[in-house]
Amino acid sequence: MSRIESFPATARPAAPIALADALGAIRAQIKALKACEAELRRALIEARPNAAVEGEAYTVTLRHSTRRVLDKSRLPAYIRDDPAFYRESRSTTVVTRPVRQNQPAVQPEDEDEFDVIERFA
Image 1: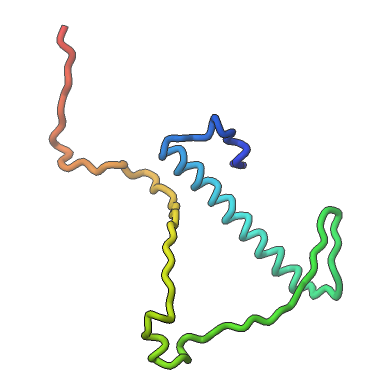
Image 2: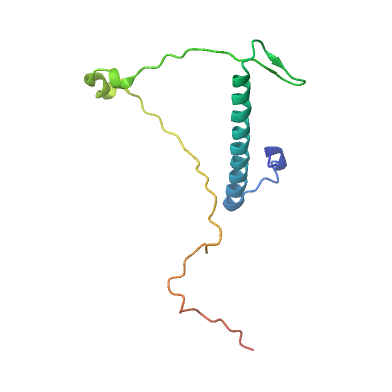
């Protein structure tokens, strides 16, 4: 499993290609863990425990709550359309996608043309 401890500060990959692969691998592991977490969460909710569930290492408690959300579509148009009621923020998103297998990284323009480099003795 890739962990940040696997890459000590002096040995962490610095090349963008290695960083991309390391980040992609970690995100794939996170995705698998989140799927497992969702299944365990679903099973716990379906079990409907009346009290905390105590394991050997962890205790799980189901807590029910209500959240109040503002429905923007129900606001008057003069508020929805007025920029004074909005604030902007900027963020950077790092997107990872697996590289397609069995495809050349660069498509040759014309497969019939190629350069031959010979060594002269």
